[in-house]
Length: 350
Image 1 (cartoon, rainbow, N blue to C red):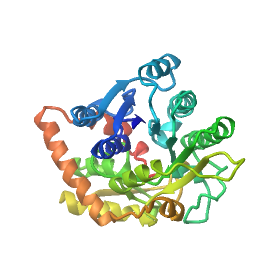
Image 2: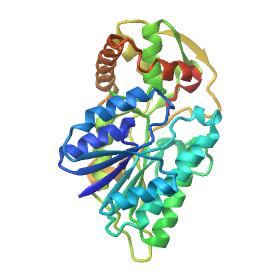
Image 3: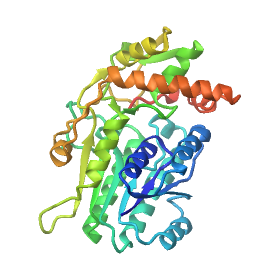
Image 4: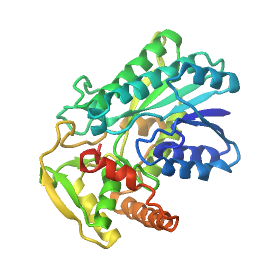
């Protein structure tokens, strides 16, 4: 079986590639290595994959017709697609909105067009986001809830992806599963995410911002649990009634909402330093709380998150300290440019 994995140099993509390769799959990883955060972190992830049997990497832009045509010529035998590539970050979508439409909308279209011309495509799994729930007040969020009030352009592009996938399922019978990720964290994570940028600030003695007096809550989901859900969903192509498109969307989260302040306390314990905390008003693009119902993915795949925040954060801290030490030994703070450029404005917690 040959699997196309987009966003292979990204956080979730890297870990998903490792899991698929570990079970003997052939993985074609693609990524355009966008410099949204320091590319050296992405290159390090790819370096860990490079020598694994069954892995091949191609640098390309999913929104480029020429690049996707080249991919189709090189690998016509792809049977499954895991589409995780995207321009990430809620708040950065207010700074560079064009990049979100280019990557998340046009890139998703590129994958759909590529997939519908594959002769043996069995299933396409793609990344959506908990952000699509927008201003919904009922928590936990359920897949049947309305998702027509996005609070950021990022969320709007992810909802657009879901609608585009539905249309391709209707028109061409493409079996697809969209996964609405809830605040993924762990080793090899993204420097723009709150837990990572908080760790950077704590170690550097810089203040961090907590919104609404630290009462903002998130459904923090550890990367290993996320990968188990991604692979489980990939192995279960949608089975639907005659006349219905073979598409679905599933929540993939921890089914537990915890205050961001609890995350900070665990970081302080692991790093052995106190955070300098500043309280601020919650930005317009942020919601007060996220939490996922996971009944549907659990029934389908047996998905059962096994990593509480109290275990996941120490694992991240262990990796972060080792990675930072190795970066310093090479004479470069590998994620310094990305985290400083992001600052408090871009410390996403979604």
